[in-house]
Length: 94
Image 1 (cartoon, rainbow, N blue to C red):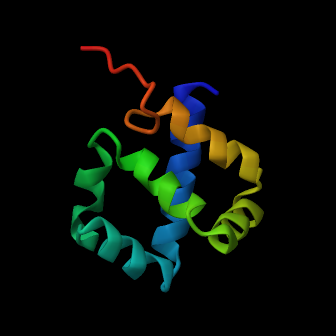
Image 2 (cartoon, rainbow, N blue to C red):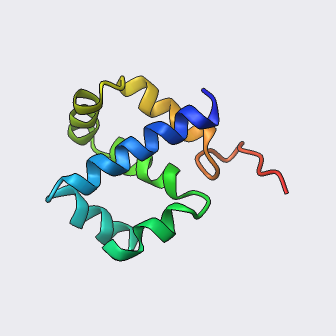
Image 3 (cartoon, rainbow, N blue to C red):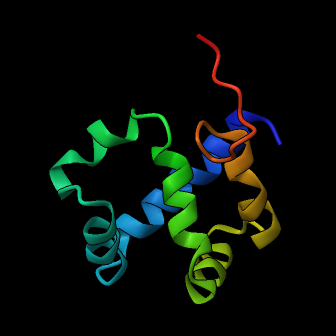
């Protein structure tokens, strides 16, 4: 999977989380960020991989996201490896 596709999936997942009144507070509590800081945090390396990690950590959430977005769970699972800090093998270019 290319980085652009992985970013698209992660942004869709973030939109899904932000639109859910139960998921958003849990996501914010786990990440330690406030709702007003999401845009700023999204620019940080590893944030999008973290969004996907949040979705992947709870199978019912993954399945709901997959159904709502039309993105297969396997694609969601593959996406973090194409993102910074989504995989220990990821090589960040200076």
